Amino acid sequence: MKREDYISWDEYFMGVAKLAGMRSKDPGTQVGACIVGQDNKILSMGYNGFPIGCSDDEFPWEREGDTLKTKYPYVTHSELNAILNYRGGSLAGAKLYVTLFPCNECAKAIIQSGIREVIYDCDKYAETPSVRASKRMFRAAGVAYRPYSRSGRTVKMEL
Ligand SMILES: O=c1ccn([C@H]2C[C@H](O)[C@@H](COP(=O)(O)O)O2)c(=O)[nH]1
Ligand SMILES: [Zn+2]
Image (cartoon, rainbow, N blue to C red; front, side):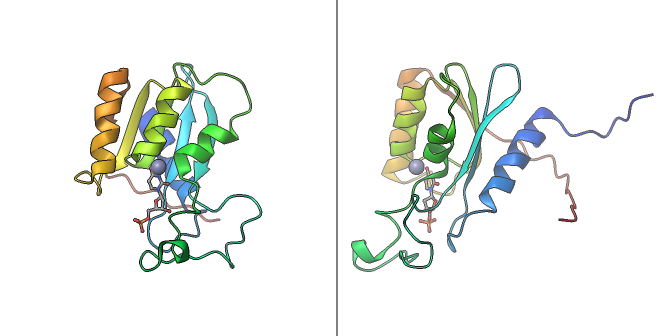
């Protein structure tokens, strides 16, 4: 008889997104993304970090102060990294699991890549103009979005 306590597709893909986020060096918010094809196969993953060649030890991780001395102009967002990491052709019809609701810049890339559904965990910046703009663009472009429904399951892994 098969075992019954296996994880659901949503738990699997959000779990992979969370694991990807654990690679982030950002001391503030670690974001992970996992792109999934229509056949439930993982196509790509990403997390927030500086571009290739921009050292994690030399570029700033500050949130505040002189803009050029903060992380914001330099960090590549997890969703964009996941989209750019995909080398297989089209992402049309794919789903995106992401641990934080996408900002407006990521929303544009998501729409233009052909991703049709976004499943997100945290929405802590919901009231910002950026996220409000994302939701407006998703609605206009017909990209569905829904919150991930946490199951409460905890996973312990020895790594
Ligand atoms: O769509 C998004 C929005 C933000 N991120 C990244 C960018 C930063 O590294 C963090 C946010 O840091 P805060 O300290 O919470 O401002 O999240 C992303 O990957 N995708
Ligand atoms: Zn973004």
